[in-house]
Image (cartoon, rainbow, N blue to C red; front, side, top):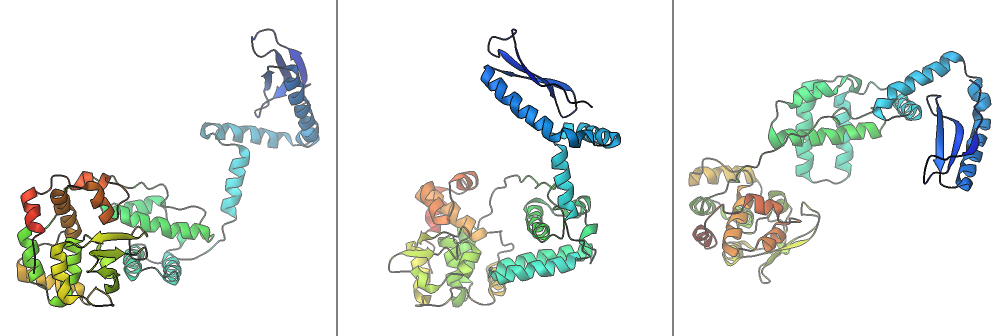
Length: 366
């Protein structure tokens, strides 16, 4: 293909673009033109286009006909996706740079968990991801990473519903992102898998009677943990990491430090009068608030109090519901719970309990 002659000409058919650069060719090899408001702009563009044509003329004319035809065909195939030949080439090179490996999913999980443990993450977090990955490894045995497919993982995930599905997807996304960064995979196989849409469900809380009976069925050593959950609304993992030195009974607040909080930020939570009555007999100058054998203690107290089922996050949900109904301050409640805004509180806790029930709740004392 002979190079076209690039020239600047006057253009009479536009009120704004009075000059045109002719003799250009687009990526498909077809003739094209560019329009400009002034002759200076057109001359500048034409000079650059001519220099580029001279620079690449020799190499482009030296290309074999079949290679030129291949480039044109590839450009046409990429056009519906808005991608260029250079972008396609870069993506292919990136995939070719992935180190060929026979690493199995079992080996990847072991390596990934080791890096997580070395970062000092909480025991509960490590326990959660370990349990989930063990189930995943059990389903996919010890097959190489190269054999894992998006469709295969998606089919496995279908047996998990709602938030559990999304939790598995989140953990697997992190796992395979790690594999991509290490060069074990060219792309994340769970990347195209979408989270399931969750429908809002009414939160489950303990009634005043259930709360009273359950707390009174607890041994003394466990009452601080559960009463802080019920009357201060701390998350279970926050209470598990809480120290008695942060429970300031005389000042009337619990300090939830950044290293303890889910949101990694400090906050102060009010100690209501009934919570102070529960905590005072058991307060210590230091040491963990969390007792050993917590699950066993809870199950025994449930059986003793006749509580058939333990609602998920039941104490924290109870705190929020009764607090909003009694104190009527949604902004203060969001701050106490460690939320960044009031959206979740407004969505889940509005009109859950009556004002009379709330008044009774905040009078539950030992």
